Image (cartoon, rainbow over all chains, first blue to last red; front, side, top):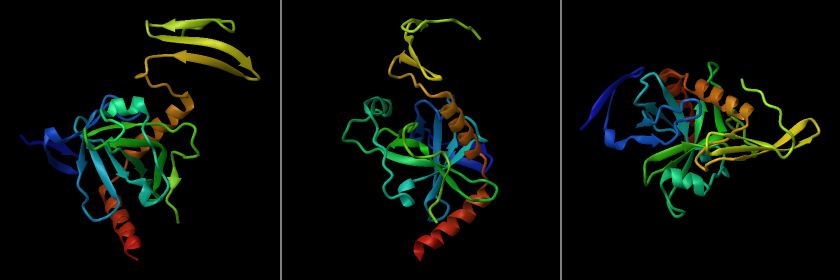
Length: 140
Length: 79
């Protein structure tokens, strides 16, 4: 049964069976769990996720390996348990994109979103001891 | 805020599943040990605050910017 919500980008129709569950929300948005993955409007590396519960809230995401070839995040046992996956299941690390008013895009490589396609679950993790920053500019 | 004085080796218990032990002072820092259920997320405050702020800023964007960026990136990739 399809549902619709009114977002700041207009009306969005979605299948409630097919949303992504952020098990712990995103950091600072812990109470928002259900997100819709919006299809790319144009071909390109960016897409966005729209909160089901908060129509004003949406995040731009990208696969950081489009820009940083060796970026890799492997979930530990605790993270796999949250995602509901085993060691052999796929898990993609996605970066939250910040688009400041000057449009000099940065990627949050310190706090990637781990997404498990098998369960449609996601978590945001913090790589505290990495060299990655919350505002990595795109490579020139 | 509750303020307590503890000596090295002493601890505090929060609820029935979080235990914090004050291990030692080291220079200007204090080493503490935390025992908590594995599902509980523990962050250094300044890192947690920075990521909250970044997530908040990342939620402020508009569709025109996204379209413009997508077009710009698409062009770069096809070169």
